[in-house]
Image (cartoon, rainbow, N blue to C red; front, side, top):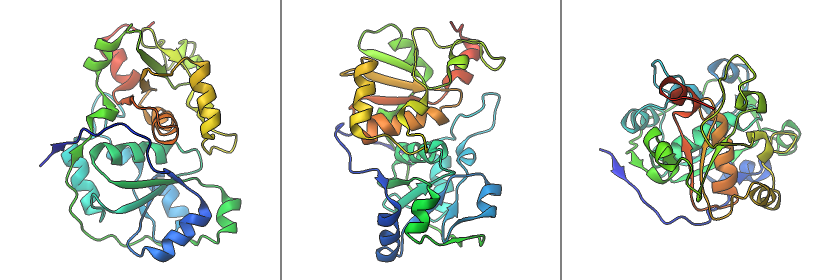
Length: 272
């Protein structure tokens, strides 16, 4: 069963967690679900002890357009088989880029996970917090996850088309500049009216998220205040990083990810 959740946009609880606080949380919550969002091969090399493997790409469906997520019902079944319920306390991490953790975070929030945090991979901080790493695959149980879709954070092609050229909407292309301008073979350009703000602009040099103050500077620089933001990249993995920054860390009220992204748009529409 899938239900719709339409909540009031508001500042959220702290979405990122430090290595030190994570170590303490592991001690106090024995039911904590730790998610490694890297590839299966990366997980097999080394991961946080008791972390389960949810490679971000396993949440995508197969088809001609790469990167589209599976249906909410399919994702709910997948999560339940991983031992995750709607009210599980979840901490997700990746290789330190925050691309894959942000993508899994966004998918989890879209289908109704209630309590999700992101742990940045910084080995110096991890060593300082004495996080235990292993190659051993963690056991997973069974749980029931019911999809409670949150449409407020998801945009489809129809919505993007309807919002083109609206003065109160900013469509942000989170790809690199050479993808945006079509100067590389993998891109023919960008969506009409989109502005280019690469996802790396919301991150520090080490891949961690910038502070609220620095993110607010980006809002001012790109004139994003009081605007609806629609984010995309090629498959909206990178767009999820900007989503976490603007929606979950800074607390902007209306931020959506266009899941189909460039890959879907270019199939049936002209790009600039």
